[in-house]
Image 1 (cartoon, rainbow, N blue to C red):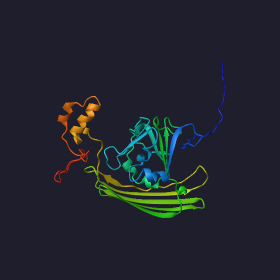
Image 2 (image 1 turned 180 degrees about the vertical axis):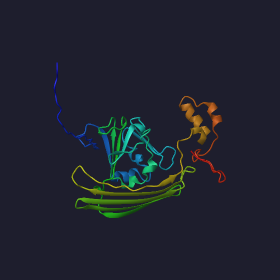
Image 3 (image 1 turned 135 degrees about the vertical axis):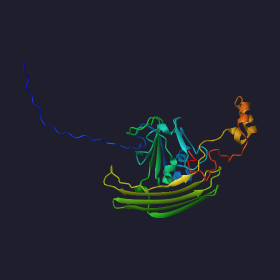
Image 4 (image 1 turned 60 degrees about the horizontal axis):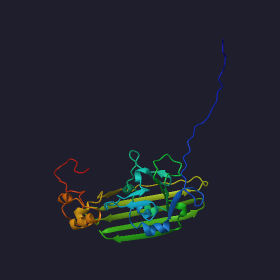
Length: 282
């Protein structure tokens, strides 16, 4: 038996479409909360962006040990390794283990127009680890009104922050927004100093309802860390004993492990030697 056949030329294209959706009120079947700019001015202050969500249902946000840029957020019990953190629809979680270092995004809060937090398995069409939820930070130049704003903040711990923002408003199909931030402080907790600059520039061109162009600049920073809160025995042994009575016991042996210091204690620092040329930090 002999079989004869021939193949015809056929051309086709492969394309990938990435869609970064935002949930819509009374349309999207998902539990979500939207924090607008006016609410952020009250809730955020000079803290890390997650702290704008600390009054949101099912969200726990904390500055941890009090170090600048060391905040974290939990959504429905899942830490931010399992929460998709996006800026303008682009995931910014660490590619290896999913964590988000908020110190790398210092100053973004001043340029943010709104934050949307979706709780539970996300409705966003992106392959990110979002079983806990999704936090989408939007810096939309088109939402800013024309004007120049200078804002300065003085806080405890020798904290000083200056923010200069200039917005063009809509000029035809274009909108521009620029923000510059300077932040310094010694910190309330020992050695939780901060020395940061942040620059943001956004240019929006409304080609149509689905296309927008934005450009971002750098945000260099340095800061001291207090990575986690200390055992209560560090702050007050008597307070630890009192809590132990309420919580069915505080191991007396633990008292020998901690020397009593005040609330400002930070064990995540040590002096370095100028004569030693090797690495003295981790």
